[in-house]
Image (tube, rainbow, N blue to C red; front, side, top):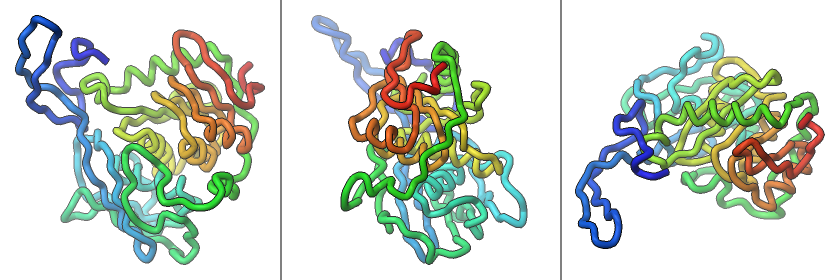
Length: 294
C-alpha cells in the first residue's frame, strides 16, 4: 500500500506513531514526517502443567481488562482479543477439543500481556510445541518427523458448503473494509469466517497470518459457536500451518488473495478442504476440491 493511500488517523488500536524520513525520489529532498506502523508485542500464554508460549502478535482492541472465561459462568459475549487468540491457538494446536476442556482462562489482573490457562486434564495434551516463542512470521516451529504427520490425526472436513465463485468478491470487499490497522499502516494480515449463506461471521487483523485465523476461530469458541462447515477468507498467502488450523476447525473452504504453497495444496487435498488462491478482481484459482464452487 502506498503511503498516500493510508488513512492519517487510526481507527483502532494496534498501531504506533513513529518518526520517519520519506525519500520521494531522485532530485527531491527527504521529508521528515510521522508515520503509523503496526505494533508488534508479546503475549505470554501460561498453560499450567503444559508450557509457556510467547506469542508475537498485534492487539487491535483498545480496552484492556482482567476478563476471564469459566465454564460454569457461561461464555463471554465481547471477550478481549487476547482471550480469543489464546482460545483459538489452544484449539488449532490440538491442546483442547472444546471450551469444556478449559477449567479457567483469564487475563492476569497485574499484567494485560499475560493470559493464564488451566486445563481440566493437562495430561491429555500431546503436542510438540511444549513451550517457546511463536513468531508472527510462522506457525510451525520445532516440529520433527514427516510433514504428513503434522496433520495425520485431523479428520477430513465435512462436505456441506457450496458457494458461487462470484460471491467471493463481495466477501473480499467486506474484509478489506474491516482492515482498519492495515488501512493506516499497510502492515497486517486479516481473516474472516463466513457462513453457508455467505455472511461474514467474525473477522480479525494481526501482524501474523496464523494469529488472525486463530483470533476468528477463538471468537467463535468463546461465543459458544462452531466453526465447522464454515469458510474463511484470508488477506495473504496460504502455507501449511493455515491449512492445518482451518481443517482442525472444520473449515471447508479457504479463499486467499495470494498464492498457496505446495505443502498447503497437499494438505488441503488430503483433508478435504477447498483451497482457492488469487481471489481478486472477480477471479480465483481453485487448487483442491473445486466441486464446492457451484
